[in-house]
Image (cartoon, rainbow, N blue to C red):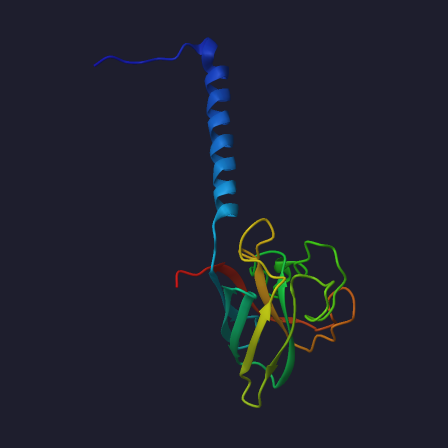
Length: 186
């Protein structure tokens, strides 16, 4: 069997060529991900330490934007701030690793009916006397694909009500549940 060797004088050129191929691969993959037409996504919620909350949030592309549907159990009765946060990181025990509200346009915090608001401002989810909350809304601002996609970001449920006006995030209190938004296979 013959061995093949690369002359040492060409090592920098070979390394540069390999780096070029890796950069090209990365660019192609990023553009492919941005071009992908995503029709449905899901976030599975888990609770912060000291709580017993679980639930799912689904996102479905429709002709009117994105339909958001959530079912959450284990909440205290009443309204709870409900937002999409900038980072898909629920690793901190208080979920601060998810960052602030997702806000690609730099608008102030507001309610979901406001034209100028954070993309992550979904409003409140209301839990009944049994601690079960349901949320359903169509949203023409949330995107599932492209450079402004919410895929890979986090859904956060807060302990208290979002007042829809306080800056920067509605004074909704502690983060009690978190889930990362991922592409759904259904």
